[in-house]
Amino acid sequence: NAGVTQTPKFQVLKTGQSMTLQCAQDMNHEYMSWYRQDPGMGLRLIHYSVGAGITDQGEVPNGYNVSRSTTEDFPLRLLSAAPSQTSVYFCASSPRQVNYGYTFGSGTRLTVV
Amino acid sequence: KQEVTQIPAALSVPEGENLVLNCSFTDSAIYNLQWFRQDPGKGLTSLLLIQSSQREQTSGRLNASLDKSSGRSTLYIAASQPGDSATYLCAVRDRETSGSRLTFGEGTQLTVNP
Image (cartoon, rainbow over all chains, first blue to last red; front, side):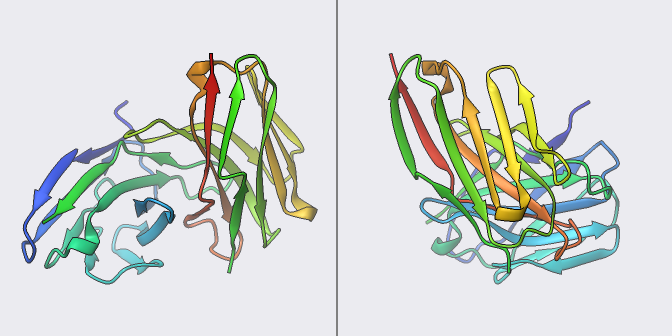
């Protein structure tokens, strides 16, 4: 059971470039979400999804797009990278049943130069 | 809007001490609270999940308590070891968001000195 898999683990981008951070889970979880973690600011929610075809914005959505075409995958797209998007990105998933906890991926460390 | 606070932000203790990490939240209408551990440069590892109907949850040397009405949770670590050094995060899954995401505190960075 792989859990939540994020790729790549590390990435360096130039300002203005675009890229997609991949997130996949094999637990048939309905809920998936993306967070960014910055020093002194904790984990902040970017976008989340409650099922295939359903996404919504979190606390800091600007500059990011998401889609959820399957239950398993929830990619995060950076449209035009900016230095302010330098961060560590975490994907998480959970069953819809609210008595369960969330499982996190190992993260993607992104640097925008 | 739910807000989660963790105090202290950093804690340094000698090996062998028992210690308590604190987590408070502003909206008591939660489903559960989850404690995570994060080692430097690594991901989040779930330690304990405590449901809103529970008062305590234990795993080995770790014990989490929950007082939902006062909006507080504590993580008790017994007989601390240098390997316990890490950042500890708490997060709530609440009714306002229908449990669709977590709200995190900023964490407590723990250092256990040999």
